[in-house]
Image (cartoon, rainbow, N blue to C red):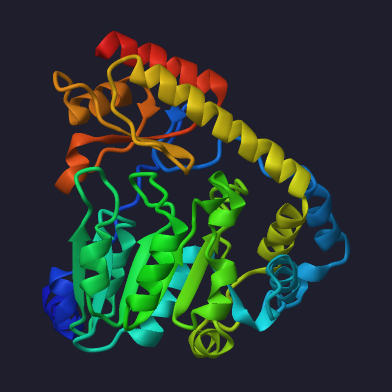
Length: 364
């Protein structure tokens, strides 16, 4: 059989759903030079806990890499459970929060089911809906002109699963907790509060304590943003014992490695360092917002580690993104929907933010 025939035979074996499937597109991760300022994927500008080094060295000294990691990431489960007065088995630790989302969809989203979400929000949700390849439908409910959720339309929506980022991405806006809980109560299916950025706002904003009174509510978290561990891939999802029990059935046997577990545990336990760096990001967020507003940008109040910025009418967001890229400054531009009028800028260090503003000043 010729190579062409073999390729044709292999292609015929691929599921037809993949022919029209569009995978998730992450932010650019190019080879970076020393002069590159990377403000496009919401990474933390500060290093993770310095206690990690000693913890990792202990793993090597004890020869633990030759052994399988704990199946449940039990130590991390217990640390989180203690903070929120939960049963550890309500927490499923995953390979980044994206694995938690995939497992959630895989567990509950079936043929013909509807997944509902505000639009825009995390762009992985529609991809996951299509990735199930079962004919599930995705319904995006446009945000209002002020970029806030359209709660009236969301409360009238019907579906198997409702997903939203809280605070939202890419807008950075935090919705009132009472409004979110009313939405959870009114929705007929499961509701996911994706709290990837929750650590950059008031701790009381989280919906984790409300899981006790809302059995259809789940909350996902990640160590990528506030704990400066995007390169590690650790996240978790919290829900009722019953719901998490079903999701756990589908996880890989050893989905989080021993180094990942130890590093995440150490970072989570080092609360003084976490708060110090978190507060620096929040301070820089406020300063950068003021500086950009002085250049004519319109920016909604952000509760995240990024700003959703609308340049003045004479400035094209896409052109500004491209011009900054030419000068080794990476920000994020989304070319669709309401987002096409904005750029998203991750909060960097003071020095990075100052260079950014200086460069933008010459361009606008």
